[in-house]
Length: 175
Image (cartoon, rainbow, N blue to C red; front, side):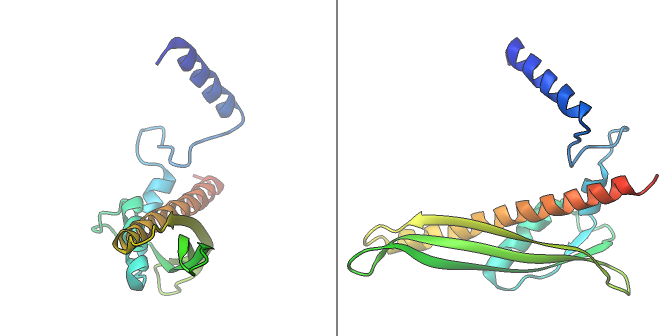
């Protein structure tokens, strides 16, 4: 990296620090994982039905970096589905483009006898692919790849929403 880029990066970081900006995943002063990272690791992701749900659950578990051996203080319950629509329908009634929309609604529950709802949210991802005449096998493979991408993007949104909530909650509690 050249000097100009380093100077710009340094000035930007200083300006953002001056306005109170802190990264969501900022570690503690001692270098240990921050509140968001610790809390995300203590989430148990409930089973999400169907293949798109399995993909989302897998992506969420990867994002939360939970080793599965620790105690889970939270349970994430999610509904997730992917719907599709044909776009750009040709005169022969064949679509040359397919749009897929992934929608997830989630709630974070306390993992105790009360199972209190702590927070909730939603995520929405839109993606699409082209369908070429006579290339049905390619369209099927692209649809499967798109479902993986949608699940990953949805997991990104949910993870950021939860991390932001944990970070705000951690900053609000004294200690």
